[in-house]
Image 1 (cartoon, each protein chain N blue to C red):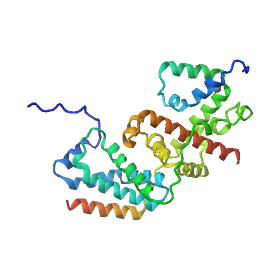
Image 2: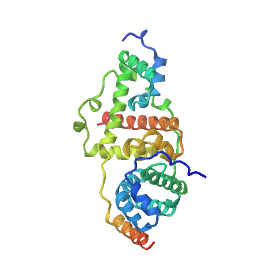
Image 3: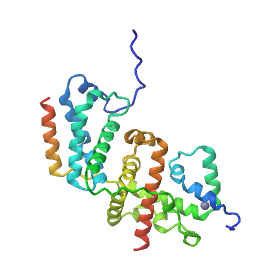
Image 4: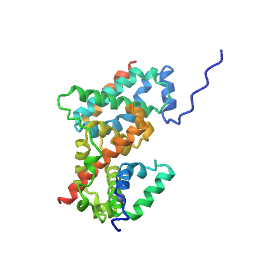
Length: 85
Length: 203
Ligand SMILES: [Zn+2]
């Protein structure tokens, strides 16, 4: 990548919209300009890869824990209360 | 006078149960408690970080939902309505507490400091298969990072990236425009990305 070929202003504009790109929320023309820029800008490619991985990791680690006994007891109490209605 | 046309049908797995409760069987509400107790507790835990606060949140959410179910118009899924209640309970309780270091996240703080700091290669934590990267210690770190987010960003991140609600749905729950949801989500993700980088770079 030559410095001259790299438009830093475009980096900043696209940086602001990377999540929308990942979520498929950009319209077609913005999506194309994002991809055009990415193909010539390693810095933005790295940034996007890290952002994508961040989302993936949080998604994958969002495991569901069992409710503790104290919570189960409170839910039971709530149900008894609703049952009387 | 003719009946007003039915609102567009929402495909809601709770639809029949809600109708039955609204039409005179309030005790069936206990089925909703069974169904949503665990997911709501998990949401509360991620939102507040403490088990007892999460339990209070679940209880208050169900009590409010029971009280106001009569006015629920079924224009969204019940689950969305329930999470909207949970989110507002959580934010309201938080405002009452003394320690609420709410701050704004700006886009600028996440920009690489200078040209030299810009990376040229994808680091291994972002390149390797995910199961080679994600271990118990990292899970703890991810959980702590979510809690380090300012609350208004945390709420958006949890609803979108953990609970899987759409931009529109999260906006309805938080009274935000879709554009605002997107802005907050992006800043929240950038915040978490920087925390992850810090974690792997200081290993
Ligand atoms: Zn760039």
